[in-house]
Amino acid sequence: MREKPLLTGHERTFGIDEIIVSKTDLNGRITYANDVFLRISDYAEAEILGQPHSIIRHPDMPRCVFSLLWTTIQSGREIFAYVLNLSKNGDHYWVFAHVTPTFGPDGAIVGYHSNRRSPEATALAKVRPLYQALAAEERRAQTKALAVQQSTRLLEATLREKQARYDEFVFAL
Image 1 (tube, rainbow, N blue to C red):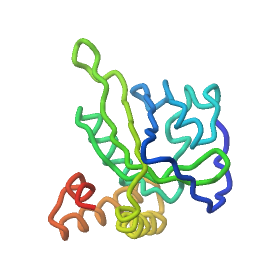
Image 2: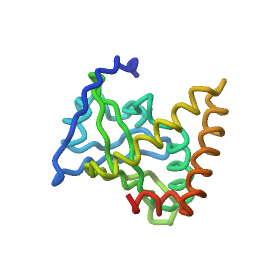
Image 3: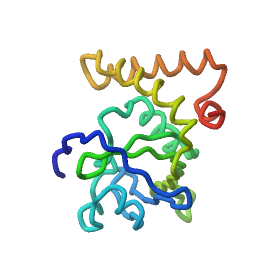
Image 4: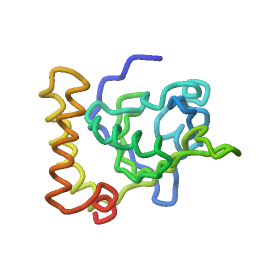
C-alpha cells in the first residue's frame, strides 16, 4: 500500500446521475470498483483491487463515523452516511454512501457493497461543521482508540440534542 498523498485542497465532483460502486471482502479489501470509482479516486483497477478501502480515507473524515458504519454493517444492517474521501493525487470528494452487507447462500455475511451518490450542497453545509468538530475532537486525543471514543461521545451528544439517530439525522439534511 502506498503512502497517503499530500492534500491539494481541490474538491472533485461527479454527476448526480453517476453512482460510485465498490465491493469489499469481510476485511474491507476492495474486490470490485466501477469506472466512476476509478475515475473519481484516480486509481487504476489493478492498483485498487485487493487494497483496503481505507486507501481512500481522507484524514479529516471522523473515525467515529467509520466506527459506526462498521458496527452497523457487521451486525447485518445497512447504513447511509456522508463520507469525505481522498483521491490518489490528494484531491478530495464527498459522497452520500449507502453501505450494505452482502449475504451468502447460508445467510452469513460474505462481504460489503457500497453505492455512493453525489451529495446535496445543502446537506454538506450541515455535515461539514459537525465532521470538523468531530475531527477536532479526535485530534485532541492521545491515541486512535481514545480519538474514536471521544468523538463518538460528541456525536452521540449531538444526536441526542437533535433527538435523532444517525440515520434519521442523515435523512433530515
